[in-house]
Image 1 (cartoon, rainbow, N blue to C red):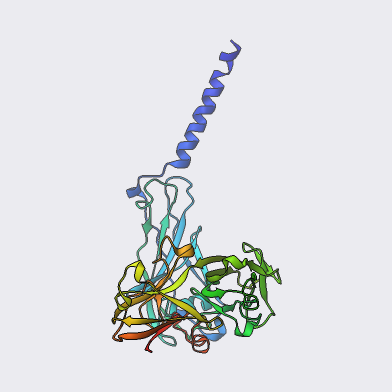
Image 2: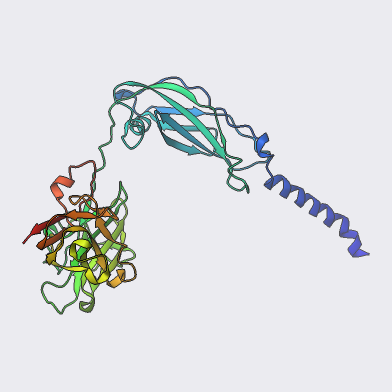
Length: 377
């Protein structure tokens, strides 16, 4: 009887818990959920004196039938392009006039003409992530339009950066060392091919570090998984020396980073120009300039036609097409189109992974630094 005494209490507790679960996890039918309403906004005038002033966009709250965590996303549209201004878990989003202006006039944003009045459209969406049919529960508001007066962007355009790889493969001279180029806008990820062979002792280990500039002011070394400023030299045993595809990821202030080293058995040319697209026809190139990051070789009986450059063997043995370059011979890209040459007979193929540093350091279009030359011998 003592057990029966507590059964009503347990049942009530279970019923209460069950009701709470239903209330917590079940939304109203999707077609009954009303989209948010983006409130009208006055026209915006951006001026030098008011760049720090804030702009706030507001909208109505969406009722999903239970206390859901709602993500609101605000978008702006101009012409055929649109970009996301930001996200919020509340019914408003605030940003500075400077941030808004820069996004609107950026060529990678909406590319509004600077110094002019333009009409833009905005809308907001709401979404919940824990529903089985999240697409049906994503609701989009009607658009609003307003005029905005812009000024020139206050941020400098991004230019591809590079870091240096000094070591005993090149005399410990940062100002002349091989370099790695940043892979994307503000990615702080740098890549490149470097010939890591001890230049002082052919049978000795290779030791090297990474520097932010052409000097030792800021350098990283030590653990490849968590490099530190002024850390120990990174070491590759003599038996493993050779060409390496190097990827370095750092934080913005270069205070730490990690490095991934992938050895290439060879740098080659492949294609109908050098005998065919079979592996047996790969023309192996030789590193002719360690600091210049140049690999070159001669095909004695070039037939003319199409070709590409690639890394083979070593860590690329299972997929020799993983790292291949083609396209514009002056700015080759990974996986680019086949390159064509009309030259026949004895022809030299050369690939350069360093690029033209002065030109690239000023080029805001940020082309690939890797280029090639094909010349009759």
